[in-house]
Length: 236
Image (tube, rainbow, N blue to C red):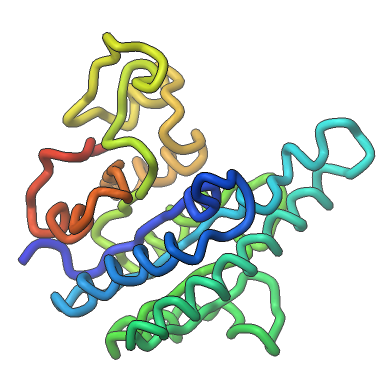
């Protein structure tokens, strides 16, 4: 068995499916089954989900009507909506789930308490971290890295629509080259948009590997955790 405690980061856009916005319940069903396979294998799983399928703070604030800080808080609330949906989907397949929010909203979820989150993980519960870091100007990528460091995760898996890190967009360029492994410094110096620079720097400082993979390849998450890295890229 490979990793024991893992944080999986899903983009909000991935939840939208072909519609491009909102939440596709079939994708929720698929993700929850993938998460269940990890839990059944004895892996402790934490999840962070973006909010881009509902609203992104930067986009909301682009024309000046909405301030960036307000736009970012709107984005944080969007991650809570996605978190509730993910919690329901995971519970539907028999998992025990707790959601913690960086902004207090006790009627919906627990506030983020590090020791409590770790205790949930130790008991085999899936923990969903939502509302980002609770601060504007920080992305959910940074929130994912921060929470992963705080809970002592061995790795972050960023589950996306592509199977790794490329030197350019593989959906546009046929000659795009995939990196099997790539360094934090290379990501930062070459401005490769894997995760934002703050999250990469935080991962580097804490020697936390980041694995980029295709979330829509069945059993890919479990294969990666068990050591099969053919269908991903590793940032380390």
